Length: 183
Image (tube, helix red, strand yellow):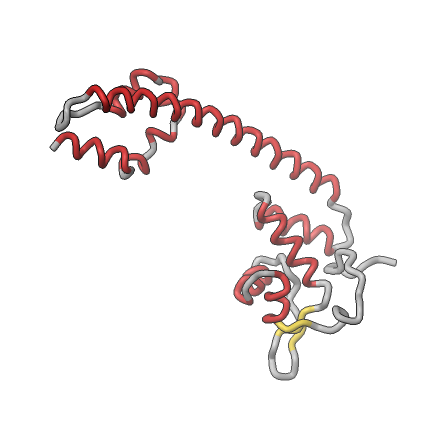
């Protein structure tokens, strides 16, 4: 027996075998009705039937589908990637190998981000220690040259794009404090 395209193996019970209106589905899934409509527009959630009054009526299985969508999006699967997988599933395909490959790619990306974050953490700790020393030894009203010192001490970070050299830092408290010292 083949399941319906949006079933995702949710066993019907007395409490979940009736159609759900948008508000109820949204509440049970932890999303807004606008989010449900967004999922519909993007092709992630099948278009529901309509009541005589025009209300959207979702199948009970839609709850599992919305939870699947939220889970996939929360781990970095893009709407486009998820749409491809769900479309394959809805056509009766078995996208398991694609899902596994996508998960492996996401894991590799997370591992790279973690390595980058650990590197940035080491650089930030070293920079803060250096900056604390420089600020202690800089007379009030004189410039400590914190960013200049960082670029000289960590030239590879400057080339790589250290978090210390991003545009957001220029607006940060560190630079505001440094500018106060200059006045």
